[in-house]
Length: 388
Image (cartoon, rainbow, N blue to C red):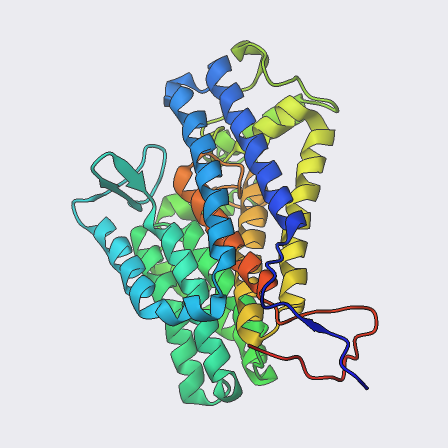
């Protein structure tokens, strides 16, 4: 049977649906932060005009970066791992020096300030990890179930988790763990390792509980099982739930007075979903959840059409990152997860987070646009796909 696919060497195809969805979220974010700054609801946290302007600039810069990355063949990009991986680790290591600082309202020293610029190096490390681990898996997948090879993969995944954990940023460490799990489970891992995983994970959790977490972090977790037992620990989440419900069905609108809204600490950042509920109501909040679900599912769908295993692993890493961010952030607001400082993708205030999320979307777009073929309804699934 004659091949029914066409080569697309000279044609750049972009996943317009994915780009539109993430940019729609980013535009909503700018509007929300502009509203927060104009109403003055979060003036005591210093949220002024600079916040929405930074968000707008980051959205534009991030979109440009995503398009630029989509033009670069991801197979060539990963081969530069020896440049960006050490650079990302060095930036994270600098947070342990005098250059690192703890942002107001945070529990961890995970930020760098170099001159007038401040950013969170862990966001850069996420991108580096997805690329390097994808490359590692694609080159070693056939041997990955051999003990020595599996040990090397575990070390590769464990290093960023441990480094971020040492910063005290346990939320981001969980995100790295989620990325690792989704990526390695999308490879040809033996069922024996999967069967042993619950025992290993249980041991890690026990070690964290008894030897790493302090009393404050333990209380944040225990409060989920004992609601109403500590009003101080529950304060932010209780306010968040009240704010989320106060918008009722249709919301209060964007540009009211400060007294029209319920103030929640970090309402512009980790708890921005509570403001979505206030201004857009239940319908708006559900609409936003549908958009976020679409983004996650679209990334997963793009992994299924990647032309090689490397592209699949990159997409699955991006999927694990996006899904874990959404679940952890919204779980915090709904009091179904502890408060661990995880931003809502493309919504929470933060230039570093916005640009890095767009960069990760750019990697997904690269796998999509550099597929070797365009399939049509007559494609024979038994035919081998041509690879560059």
